Length: 89
Image (cartoon, rainbow, N blue to C red; front, side, top):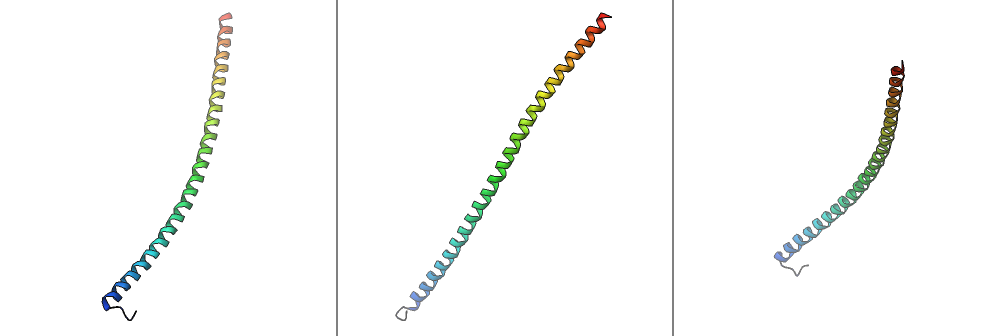
């Protein structure tokens, strides 16, 4: 190191600073990447739960619609029977 000129020592110091900064940046990038993977997994799990709930709701709505249609048919049949009885009088 003593054989280096002042310019070379200054250049080497700048290079060492650049290396240190690059290593710090890489560590931060890796940490950010890990956080993003964790966040992505969390979001995926939440989306899976939402999709499951949506499927359950759609199934329940279909059941309600079938029940409503059955009830409507039964009500119409009852009204027709009542009307028929009233005509017989």
